[in-house]
Image (cartoon, rainbow, N blue to C red; front, side, top):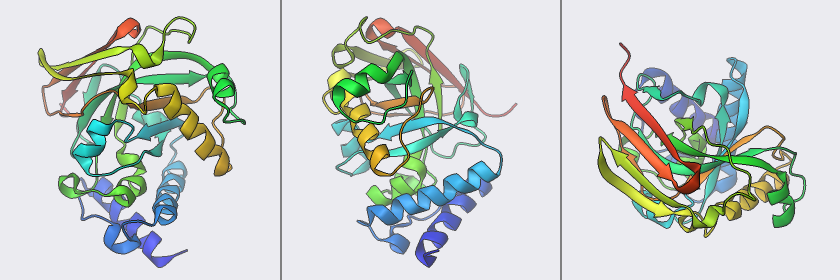
Length: 258
């Protein structure tokens, strides 16, 4: 095991366990070594699985130009979704360090994706729902570059899914409008084209990347396709509600334990 990869994983693991954000890991693995960053992510994934977590899908990050500008990077990335990341409408803050909310489309796959042709990717989607992804960073102050966020499981936190499933013949992902309110005040807005031009483009990118890594997307996977507008900082007592066109509304209320 590469010493720098191990040290970076230990730093992020310790930050998550202690609840104290850490320094960026780019000083250990470099600011441009994407392979090293994914090696850190893979090591942390293996540790989480060993502790009993189960993989339920993937998340695509940094698909919106607005979010890329916010965090200072210029390309998408991906991370792993675990079963313990899925929340109901009340999101506990006890294990989150620096949470921010994003509104996006979640795709649920009805078949494995072994061919990244756009038509094959589209055909593999069973349905889509509205989602709020709560991104988080183990790195203090969100001072992240591309290798930092990849290593940190694409700055993952938790997610909430809506309850209006639609097939792809019932709506056009690129055309959906998005409005997200925090405590009743408009805090973020955008549309499907903010996500790599079309959330299906993001899914196709992920499908191809996963195939290249010999870890293809599988039937039943949930894929959070990426933000449709700027992310919004949230804290104790905040309520966020997103409305995504025909996919309807999804909400999350953030509370400290107890």
